[in-house]
Length: 395
Image (cartoon, rainbow, N blue to C red; front, side):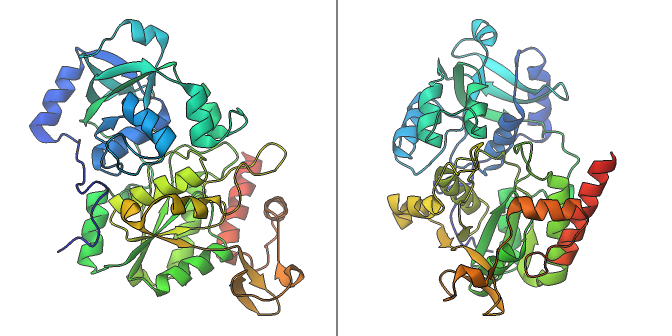
């Protein structure tokens, strides 16, 4: 079996201890200073350990933090677009120093998950973090709000994971990068397209997935299941939508559904780069970038990022730097005159010919138990959403 694409940086990182080493670390953690992790930091911890965030071996130090914000590259020159950092409180700062080994803990379970040797302790420049990573300091932006909810100090160092975060959800779909790479190799998929999603897939998404799959050997639908903002559809409901859609409308020989444990950052174009690099670590050779990738709207409904900023940002890197091929898709829709799904690249007709439904209109229909037009959503997917809204209303 041979790999079709090298991990970012050339080597798949493995910072997970097993067997006797894990037991030794678990025992050692009992005598160490305990530092709690936020839920999004737990997601990052797991992805560092499994190699999803290769070449990172731990939480970033000051040089990488500044270089990523200012240049979208790690200090040693490798392309990387978003900080991956661990913050601490002022009280925690008083009890640790550089050189200490600490236990990183999940406050929900009370379990220690990993060891970390502290290599750096430095101030968290939240204003720079927000303005450079997110292009705004508005706390209405969920990513910026998270930054300002973090501690004022950051700690850096390599991690050694000895216990996986407790997660009873989607166990059959949880696959580390080494596992997806093995699957792709066994299936002889040399060209593998990844699709990032945090929303149910409607017909426009289905269209671009099938367009992409026509030029590839396989498709990995890779929904994000970490933290999202409160009004996003819960991952349990989304997974039911993906399952029914793939079962009924995609070839099982050419598709793989696998979950992505990351938290959503809502960083728009920078997150598009981040999502692409991470999917390269999972073994994918191509990555779908749609309209307003990883974007988010302001309270007044206006977007923080331009519709195609996530396309344009790839022009700031060479193909060799990114190493995974982005597939750019325009706005897609059902055209009543073409009588098929199309995009602004392929359809010559005026928008009045296109079936267009706002998100609020679709949600209103679903709440009433009404099916959106089949040209907009597969009825099986709509039924999952209708039932979920009905359950929520009666809960």
